[in-house]
Image (cartoon, rainbow, N blue to C red; front, side, top):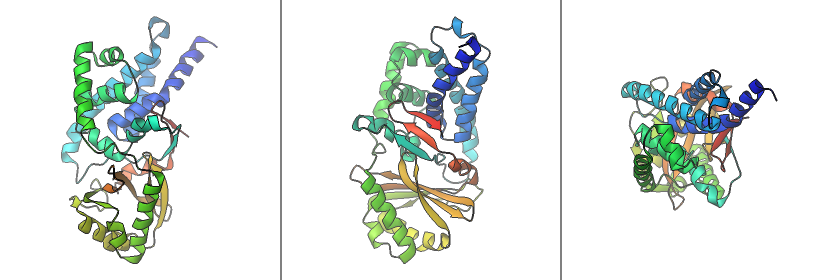
Length: 306
């Protein structure tokens, strides 16, 4: 294999890992793809023979590009209209094993929103160490800090994450039972069966981004949320085509009007299997990538587009 071919082959080998990292960091598919592409462009200008570890170089460049994009995003989100929810990602999960649950949970909408509470550097440190299995030395080099400081950063971010309940990934039966009850409530207008599957403190959030009709406030509580779904969604989604899709590693719903996706629903569950969060995406800019499907490898945390 020629040197240019070997260089391209190494990048393509690492690309799914970079995409998995960038999407978790940024929560927006287009931004994640931009970060990976920017990394590729910089890769064209280097001589891999001068690097001790080409993969580590690629991860470092991609991580720091994501940090730059997060700084820019923090300024624009100040003026964001309504709730900001990460862009839903159509996934196909592979290599699912009990020991891979941390990586499976790290892609859910609830978990991505939990990462939003961390500083950008905390987020990067946590993902590199806990999801992608990098050594403390590698994480420290990527973030340009001492290993001792890196250990403190990872410890602080890990403690913050593990205190929350957003890490639970429900069984397939629990996911299916809720979606069946949800769709039944839309048809019958009766919220009772649905309400029993909701946590008492359930929240419903909707992201329209000022470009589509969406709730400006978060609905809370079993009664308010179940009645809103049965009575309002039952009317708004009347005549649409509703499909089940795996999104962010958990089954959700995609709503179609003709050939256009107009809404997507992803979920967050409690450890008891009840639904704690319902996320409704209405922003058309965040729905356009649902035609793409990404293979999620739980052993590596990577995302590879089909």
